[in-house]
Every structure is written in C-alpha cells, then in structure tokens.
Length: 375
Image 1 (cartoon, rainbow, N blue to C red):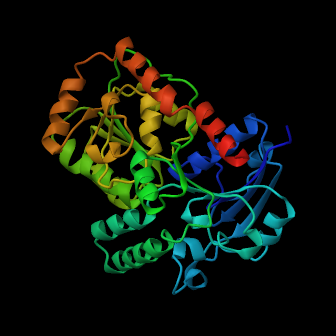
Image 2: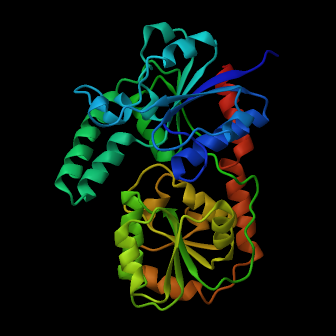
Image 3: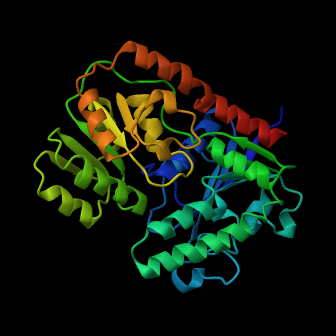
C-alpha cells in the first residue's frame, strides 16, 4: 500500500493545544501521525509562535502571516476567510500531490482554485459559521462588534452555499451534519466529533469538594457563561466554585473579587487543568449558543465526575444521558445542591465508557478520516 499523505491547512498554529479549535486540529495531526500518515501542515499565524512540537508529527510545517485589519477586508468574502490568504500557499500545495483538509471555513480561500480542481478536498466544518456569527451578533452589546458579527454572518451564509468544490464535508456534531447534508444532498457529509487528548475514560469515582467551570475566558461565549455562573447561580450558593482558563476578561476578574467562595485560576498549564477537572465534584458548563460540540464537554466527560449543563451545550452531541441537565437558573442551583451530596460511582463510569468509546473514539475517527482520504 502506498504511503498516505495529506495537506492540512490550519486557521491558527495548533500548538500549544490550549483552546477548543486548536485542540481539535492538534489531536487530528497527532492521531494521523500515529497511523503512519505523512502530514504537510500549513498554519496561518497571528499572535502565536512557531512550534517545534509540530515538527515531531509533520513531514513539513509552513507558516503564513494572517492579514489582519484592513488587509483582511473583502466586499465578497468573509473576513475570517479572506484574512487567511497567502500567495506562497498554492505553490506548496501543488508541489506535493496529496489530498487537502481545510480546517474550517477559515482556511478555504483556495477551495475553488482551478489549479486544485483535480485534487481531493475535504472541509472540516467546526461549526455552521453563519449561525454561530448570527448568534454572536444577537448577544453582543457593542454596536460596532454587533455590526461586524452580523456582516460576517451574511458573508458566511453566501460562502457556505458554495462548497461544491469539496469532495467531502466533515462536521463535528450531528446537528451540523444534518444542516450540510440538507444543503448538499449529493455530497459525502459525515459527522466525526472533534479530536481530544483522551483514548480512554480516566474519571475517578468518589467525591470532590468544589464545582468547576473551565474554558477560554477571553471568548465572548465563555465570558457570558462564566459571568452567569458567578452572578446568578453561585451568588447565593456558598459552595466552593473555581473558574479556570485562558486570559480572563476583566469583567470576570471583577465579578470574582468580592466573592470569597469563588476562585479564579488564570492560565493554568495542562497539568493543573487536568488535575482540577479530575478533582472537581461537579463541572458546570452552561452555554447560550447551540453550535458544534464544545471540547470542554468531552474533557469533562472523559476525566471529570458529574457534569451539569444545559440543553444548548448538548445540542447535536447525543450525550444527554451522561449529563445532568438544568433548564434555568433555579434548576442549576437545585441540582448543584443535590449532586454535592451524591457519590460518583462505577455505574456512571461504565455508562461513559460504553458511550464515549463508540462515537468519540480518536482511533475510530482517525481511521474514518483515512478512509475518506483514500476513497
């Protein structure tokens, strides 16, 4: 059998793997490498350094500066896409004959290029981006930001209807698969959930002493969730509550400052974050946007004890039976108090093993990607 090669165009430098999107890309690369695939990685770069770590897994790694600001603006294409273009990318794609994986709509600037018309092209859709940006626009309080999100949503809606040049579309949630299969009934559309660090369930039975929320604390969606938990859920529940993640927004710092039972852990390393996930008794993960699958949910289920969340977090995941679900603020409070008295036991762990190691198995999913590359 001939060597399997692939180009991967990444929207960002995928190491360190410290937020949702790049976690998925990094562990995609790592799992493909472990199956003997030769990877030619192309990274758009803005604010993250080049990484020697990536050279362990890739035959070659190239970096391209993202054209931010006015240089990234187009009247026809989404900013997230047009700002990720570079004239030196095409020759490198042409120089190595291999399928191309476009990581997200972000990286699809060359999708329709005639010199790639005979190349197998796969898009990994991390979201239905038009819906994601529309929801961001609805929830934004800043007029300039709201306008940007709204315009980007309109541009994305046009572009997401022009993906016919792709051989296959891969989504990370079942709901997104339904969306793209309806839009492209003749295309090969498959749901393969995001890749992650866990090849087995490592949850411990027993009890923890605190509740945890974790995520990128500079992202608007996570800022809203963290402030909701601080100001509405834990304001009058004096159970120890830890918020941990990257670059906390000043609003989160301020909200935590006056509440002695709430701790903020800024920029924990992987070891510390994994320890907190494993030691927490309840991981509380509300979200107010139905989009993709949040990798922090998979982290919590593979490595944490009780997971308390709302229906929006579980949208399109099929993981409802593994979580405790709260519909509103009062239910969050009630179920936190109830779960804090419960023991996390082996029955719950076995349920997770049976479910997670089917649909959310890195090995199963990387073999499916390899079949798509060969097919």
